[in-house]
Length: 480
Image 1 (cartoon, helix red, strand yellow):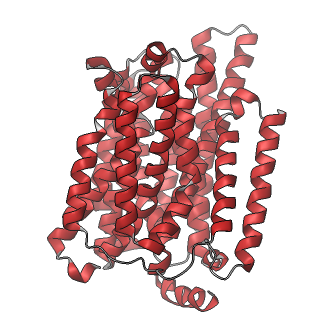
Image 2 (cartoon, rainbow, N blue to C red; image 1 turned 135 degrees about the vertical axis):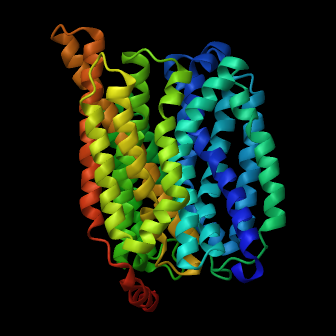
């Protein structure tokens, strides 16, 4: 693909792809700011309101693997445009929604379109940039969009909701979606999928999609239903059973959805485990730090968004140039481990933030370290997960790493939020003041998040040296 695109056009194409991905990333957080307005306008109850978020997460998490594989089979650009169209039309439906059912259904459609876009965008970038230095720089830009988009969503959600109304958090996607679609037609050449001619593993696709959706549902409802409840245990057991069935199918079918030989690559396996732990730490940090700023320090939505600005600017500085230079100088393993350790230190600082903290002393240092850590580490994680992959499996590998981040983030947020709630309840029962009790819960969540990030850093040391990639790829190709 790249031999048909000159250098400047490649970077324009990367910019357009990143705008498409940014829409998806923004939508995971922008809606949280508007939930109170949505609740009062459409008459949601406290329990039904969570489906505005859960409907999106269910389809997004469930269809990442299938979306990536469909891109390999039928063409990455084609699937990107299909996913983008579905997401944009679903955004229109969300923005025009005047009932609970319409909004929830449109959010589910958004999640499906977002899953396809996310799963194949990384593959398109890998196709566009094959030279190591350019690829490292391009992955840094993509990494910044993924890592920094969430906090941009909080700021944008606050502005749109306060200045206009909640409908505009969805309608703002329309001009972006139309522009990205038109520019992709111009900048990205069409082509058959690298795995064109292979059959789709329908049984494998059905079992893994159902397994992921059940697991996501169990996780996002775990705190409300109770982790020891029959519902949670039953759903998780069903998800595990379907996963076992999926693995059995993949071991026997001629054209598996996920060739198990893929996980013989140490870089793929380690990078995805690191991704789970890293996402578990960062998703929880993002949401719980926003709660700390709002409920303990009394910040409004706009102030919360601005508080994340230092981390975003630092991530931008690293992701848009410095990270690529670090990777080219030191490889993948050392920057990954160092970045995650810096981020773990930032989380540990948040775990020490007091109930009467101020921004300069107790928020800015942690934000700074997390910005540095994420800016250094995100690029190597993506490169490790994708660099040994054959072109015919790049969409699948992109789906796998996105699924790892999604499942790790959902599980980490659920577990750490549960720990925070239990700690807060214990302190309240002991007669502690409400604000102090809330802060005590958040501190324990930040501390465990720091442990997750540190564990990911230690695992990163197990990654093979970049010079081992070529023979390892040859070995897995032979095994496949």
